Length: 400
Ligand SMILES: [Zn+2]
Ligand SMILES: [Zn+2]
Image (tube, rainbow, N blue to C red; front, side, top):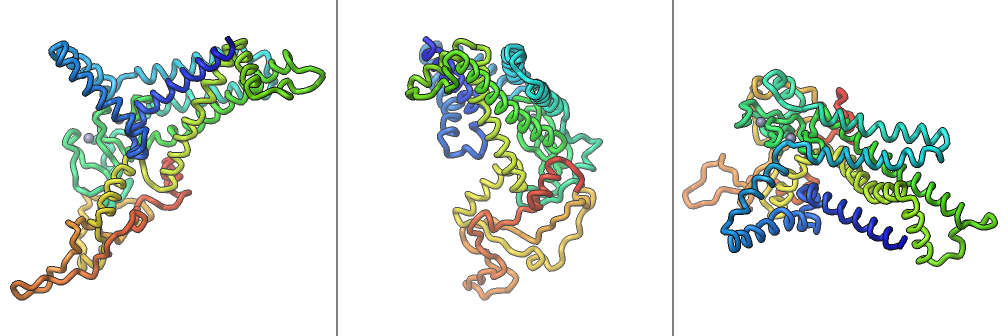
């Protein structure tokens, strides 16, 4: 009985968390060409297509429009269903766990429990309420935040919806219906975009969730282990001494079933802590690389063109002997400490040819020696990478 309870609880938590993970995050560029990306496409594209075919055969296509508008609502409208699910799961788990564990905890653990369950709510609140939208009032300030690298971001482009100039590193979010400063991604858990002004709280949320879940898991382990010791430990020996592996699992299943409030939260925390940690590590990697989730997708496109041998680079100062004066109204001066002297061109695979020298008819123009073939993404300069610590200061929105 105990073993079945444990197995069912573990499998349902694992199944549910993998499903949520794939459905929400499978579209991220990091999962492109992985089983997670494949399952995400299966879930969002292939299964709906299959169902639509069945619907048109059996019901004359009456079901699809309803499902489509519901799907559009879930995926693209800014609704709080996922946020409610998230806060609900968090609060119910805490209400199950904390009152039950409280009498068995010492002062240190009581204080730590209070801190670790409060912090995620504070950071979550900040992430949800702080908007990073570009408005007519702040567009000037936003334009002066980052220089245009002329690789991922080019000056002088106007957003066709907001009718405002697009600052470097920004992106229009169709869900928030606004351009977002230093756009990282639209997070449906937060019903908000993660951008320049709230990224620090987003990092803090990931960190505080990782700490809380790991701590919850360890505390759950400690309490269940104590119960087992009390029930089965004899003569000072540890209860699990000389137990076979299967009996050890059976005893744990018993402990979970016997104290289901602590047991279930222990399992849930154990299975979701790696998710939170995974995202924290991914975002630390993004900070280290001086990039954002949005920009990694753009870099991926460059990577593909590089793989096909289409990208050539040269020194801007060599190509443009007399650089055009900067138009302050579309490209104001920034405080950014890095500059770049790189110019990239996309070719059809042929090396660029110099057209400055007049050629006799029929003679091919010579290859332009200033342009070198780009062989890998690492040989491109990323203007937004200042080194880990300065990237971190920028990500935390501290003045650099
Ligand atoms: Zn816009
Ligand atoms: Zn958004």
